[in-house]
Amino acid sequence: MKNKMVSVGTYLDVIDNSGAMVVQCLKILGGVPKRKGYVGDVVILSAVKVNPLKKIKKGDVLRGVIVSTKKSKLRHNGVLVTFDTNSVVIINAKNLPVGTRITGPVMLELRSKQFLKVLSLAKIAI
Picture (cartoon, helix red, strand yellow):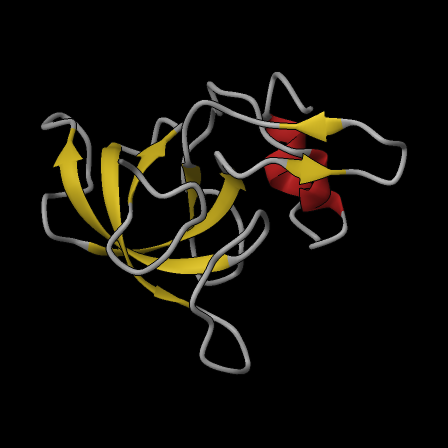
Protein backbone atom coordinates (compact mmCIF):
# COMPACT_ATOMS: atom_id res chain seq x y z
CA MET A 1 0.00 0.00 0.00
CA LYS A 2 1.35 3.40 -0.95
CA ASN A 3 1.58 6.31 1.44
CA LYS A 4 -1.13 8.92 1.15
CA MET A 5 1.15 11.66 2.45
CA VAL A 6 4.68 12.24 1.25
CA SER A 7 7.43 11.02 3.55
CA VAL A 8 11.09 10.10 3.10
CA GLY A 9 11.33 7.20 0.65
CA THR A 10 8.05 7.92 -1.14
CA TYR A 11 8.03 7.58 -4.93
CA LEU A 12 6.45 10.57 -6.69
CA ASP A 13 5.29 11.15 -10.26
CA VAL A 14 6.77 14.16 -12.08
CA ILE A 15 4.12 16.06 -14.05
CA ASP A 16 6.35 18.44 -16.02
CA ASN A 17 8.58 18.03 -19.07
CA SER A 18 11.91 18.42 -17.25
CA GLY A 19 13.05 14.88 -18.10
CA ALA A 20 12.44 13.02 -14.83
CA MET A 21 9.44 10.71 -14.78
CA VAL A 22 9.57 9.11 -11.32
CA VAL A 23 11.54 10.45 -8.34
CA GLN A 24 12.11 9.34 -4.75
CA CYS A 25 11.87 11.75 -1.81
CA LEU A 26 15.14 12.07 0.12
CA LYS A 27 14.30 14.95 2.51
CA ILE A 28 11.45 17.32 3.28
CA LEU A 29 12.72 20.85 3.80
CA GLY A 30 11.41 22.94 6.67
CA GLY A 31 12.46 24.65 9.89
CA VAL A 32 11.99 21.71 12.24
CA PRO A 33 12.61 18.10 11.14
CA LYS A 34 9.44 17.37 9.15
CA ARG A 35 8.19 13.81 8.82
CA LYS A 36 5.32 14.35 6.35
CA GLY A 37 5.08 16.56 3.29
CA TYR A 38 1.96 18.33 2.08
CA VAL A 39 1.09 20.46 -0.96
CA GLY A 40 3.49 23.38 -1.33
CA ASP A 41 6.39 21.82 0.59
CA VAL A 42 9.82 21.82 -1.05
CA VAL A 43 11.52 18.42 -1.09
CA ILE A 44 14.92 17.02 -2.09
CA LEU A 45 14.52 14.25 -4.68
CA SER A 46 16.52 11.58 -6.48
CA ALA A 47 15.68 10.72 -10.09
CA VAL A 48 14.66 7.05 -10.40
CA LYS A 49 13.16 6.86 -13.91
CA VAL A 50 14.13 9.41 -16.55
CA ASN A 51 13.67 10.19 -20.24
CA PRO A 52 17.02 9.42 -21.91
CA LEU A 53 16.64 12.30 -24.39
CA LYS A 54 16.53 14.98 -21.67
CA LYS A 55 19.20 16.62 -19.52
CA ILE A 56 18.31 15.02 -16.15
CA LYS A 57 20.09 11.69 -15.59
CA LYS A 58 19.22 8.76 -13.32
CA GLY A 59 20.47 9.33 -9.78
CA ASP A 60 20.58 13.14 -10.03
CA VAL A 61 19.64 15.00 -6.84
CA LEU A 62 16.91 17.57 -7.54
CA ARG A 63 14.59 19.99 -5.78
CA GLY A 64 10.85 19.83 -6.25
CA VAL A 65 7.58 21.16 -4.92
CA ILE A 66 4.68 18.86 -4.05
CA VAL A 67 1.65 19.82 -6.18
CA SER A 68 -0.85 17.03 -5.37
CA THR A 69 -1.20 14.26 -2.80
CA LYS A 70 -3.46 11.26 -2.27
CA LYS A 71 -4.30 12.58 1.18
CA SER A 72 -7.55 14.51 0.93
CA LYS A 73 -7.59 18.23 1.78
CA LEU A 74 -10.65 19.90 3.30
CA ARG A 75 -10.99 23.52 2.22
CA HIS A 76 -12.75 26.34 4.06
CA ASN A 77 -15.73 26.23 1.68
CA GLY A 78 -16.39 22.56 2.56
CA VAL A 79 -14.93 20.97 -0.60
CA LEU A 80 -12.83 17.82 -0.14
CA VAL A 81 -10.07 17.58 -2.78
CA THR A 82 -8.34 14.23 -3.48
CA PHE A 83 -5.97 13.08 -6.25
CA ASP A 84 -5.00 9.65 -7.59
CA THR A 85 -1.23 10.10 -7.30
CA ASN A 86 1.39 11.97 -5.31
CA SER A 87 2.89 14.42 -7.81
CA VAL A 88 5.78 16.88 -7.88
CA VAL A 89 7.18 19.60 -10.15
CA ILE A 90 10.97 19.97 -10.46
CA ILE A 91 12.20 23.46 -9.46
CA ASN A 92 15.57 25.22 -9.38
CA ALA A 93 17.24 27.08 -6.50
CA LYS A 94 15.10 30.20 -7.14
CA ASN A 95 11.84 28.18 -6.86
CA LEU A 96 11.13 28.46 -10.59
CA PRO A 97 10.05 25.37 -12.56
CA VAL A 98 12.71 23.68 -14.71
CA GLY A 99 10.21 22.41 -17.28
CA THR A 100 8.20 24.57 -19.65
CA ARG A 101 4.91 22.64 -19.45
CA ILE A 102 2.95 21.05 -16.61
CA THR A 103 0.80 18.20 -17.86
CA GLY A 104 -1.24 17.29 -14.77
CA PRO A 105 -3.55 19.06 -12.34
CA VAL A 106 -2.15 21.07 -9.42
CA MET A 107 -3.80 22.32 -6.23
CA LEU A 108 -4.67 25.97 -5.66
CA GLU A 109 -2.97 25.88 -2.24
CA LEU A 110 0.29 26.62 -4.11
CA ARG A 111 -0.85 30.24 -4.33
CA SER A 112 -0.46 30.76 -0.58
CA LYS A 113 3.04 29.19 -0.73
CA GLN A 114 4.15 31.70 -3.45
CA PHE A 115 4.55 29.20 -6.32
CA LEU A 116 2.69 31.39 -8.80
CA LYS A 117 4.83 30.42 -11.81
CA VAL A 118 3.92 26.75 -11.27
CA LEU A 119 0.23 27.70 -11.15
CA SER A 120 0.49 29.81 -14.31
CA LEU A 121 2.10 26.95 -16.29
CA ALA A 122 -0.51 24.38 -15.21
CA LYS A 123 -3.44 23.75 -17.50
CA ILE A 124 -5.67 22.55 -14.66
CA ALA A 125 -5.64 24.10 -11.19
CA ILE A 126 -8.07 22.49 -8.76
